[in-house]
Image (cartoon, rainbow, N blue to C red; front, side, top):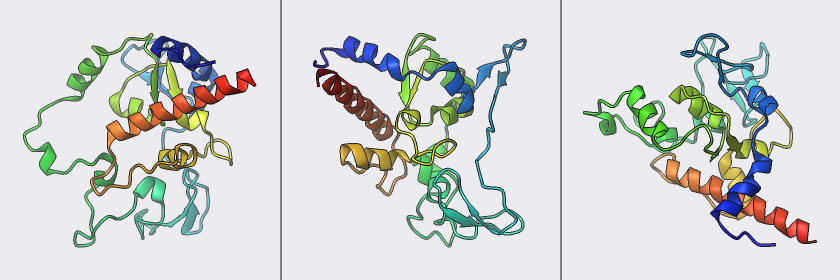
Length: 216
């Protein structure tokens, strides 16, 4: 069998849609039963760290070890790659928060008056409740955007960590293993278009693998 069209691809993706149980397990926001302006979470919305009194902890997401001061500050930003990123250059020992993940700098935000409500409205003009959204760890995006959407394919679920939940594989590692490509290795932080395209390529690969197995 072959992948005939976008419609065919959409139909084949349905098998990878997250179930209600998976959405709850991976802490996707759910509608509040009585208050339409609130969301309900069934998991831990924070970062997952192993419980230990030792100053050297293991991150349940990388899973690398990292060290904290008594005040909870990171001793070495490079230790926990998943959360802290790799230090790209020295800015008097300080890298502005979020740059390594978003690629945005303080200068980029000068003069910007776009609100969260503006962003939500723009997104909701582009998709509806029936739209299938595909991405990596979209629960984090939905929490940041304060959006509730249950029609989702999440590559962190399709390509799970070998240690099981709650561990998650980094997108760049999945892409390297299955597509033999390198992403997120530039000096300007994450590129959301690159990440989105990588997720789409991964699912195209996954669907085609399924078609080939059906033929065999």
